[in-house]
Image (cartoon, rainbow, N blue to C red; front, top):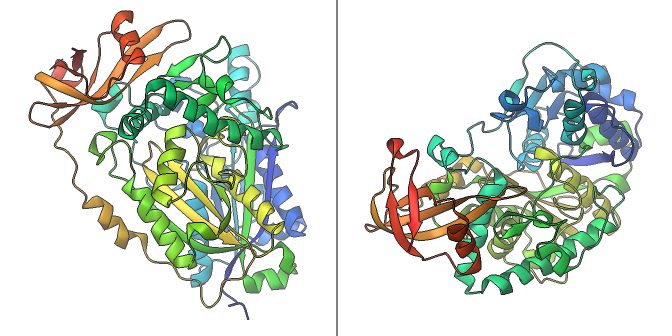
Amino acid sequence: MTDPRMPVLIGGGQATWRKAAPPGPRAMVLEAVSRAAADAGLDLAVLAGADTIGLVGFTIDAPGTADRLKPPRMANPPAALAEDLGAKPHTAVYSHMGGNTPQALVNWASERIASGESDLVVLAGAEFLGSLMKTLASGGDTKLFTGGPDTDPVRWGDGRDGQSAQESAHGLSLPANTYPLFENALRAKLGRSIGEHQRKMGDLFSRFSAVAAANPYAWFPTERSADEIANESPENRMVGFPYTKYLNAIIQVDQSAAVILASAAKADELGVSQDKRVYLHGCADVAERWNPLDRVNYWSSPAIGLCAEKAFAMARKAPADMALFDIYSCFPSAVQIACAEIGIETSDRRPLTVTGGLPYFGGPGNNYSMHAIVSMREGLRAKPGAFGLVTANGWFLTKHAMGVYSTEPVQGAWARENPKGYQKQIDALSSPEIVREPSGPATTETYTVIHGRDRLRMGIVIGRDANGRRFVANTPDDDATLLDLESREGVGRPGMVSSADGGMKNLFIPG
């Protein structure tokens, strides 16, 4: 008999406005929730009884984005959803930034249900940068992007910036600038040539695009060859070496997704049929050493490894038991490093995504993994008794959440280990000493070259000085220096580093 306090996913829904005009974030969120209710076999009016609502933070509310774009905004998205549902939840939260958030919210909500704090939970999110940017560029009416109660939301999650001021000053404030650092370090660690590794990335993400091509919710439902993805072309420019455009998550989309969770007793009361129920068997949340400069290295992730260990232990399963995966796929390095830490090959015969991945399905801001959870739910219901793993990643391989799902009911009471306990294992890891104002002989630990649409922009280097201390710097921005870093291996390259402006303008000149 299933424990009455067992958390159960009873509904999931998603929507994509690829061709039709999206109705604005408030209506987009409500559409996803409406579809989730229908998926559960419930009238939307039932959700007036939701006691807990969680909204994934919109990208426009990310640190710095609002100041830069000055976009129209909803003051309190979870309160707006509650108003639309006619609900009066005792708990309503709006998350801080991070792609880990959807899975982390499911983990949090499940724990609340198991402990008796919640009975009926709605989790949702949307991304609408596609239509918003077009509206701002054309000077169109922005009222669709506003509305709702004029109150401050309760923020949820870890709201720290993803990088320090010094890292940001050298270009490490954007994922497209930072993930290439992991990729180039990984290539050097594996001992591959630049060309060989480029082909491997193309092979990996070609398989993702094939899944997207068959997904009616994908932003780019087009299968692409490995060569088309990995090689530069007029349609596929280099963004941050070694990543072409087709290897980057696409954030300017219009997509929404939602899930509904309940206690088993509440699901029974609502009449939700057994064949619609999906259970969270295992979960975990772990953060890496926070800032990029604090990492143990740039080709592994101890936090992902520990997160997987804890999630599988709770589920009493192993990677070999999974029939389905959705490995967070903002960039190839995120997939490759996660696979290595989880203990599966990137060439595994099982698809590594149920959506098609962030560059092809779409990368709807912090809410991508909500789509993955909805898609995983659909995939598992088509394979009763099978298990699937969803991984979610925030900032720069920084915040991680995982969930192991199945239609098979969990046996016994639902309980998870407190993440604060095992987080201490990561916090205790040692990493190189950081020197803020480096000077003298130095060596690159990893690097990237950032491209604009029509020119080379800058090189970013994380390196070590003669005493083994780590630093961040830019390179000279002349084409000869930058093209040389792309034409032959730059990891381990010797050079000279100098500092200015209190370490906010470090310069590394490759030898």
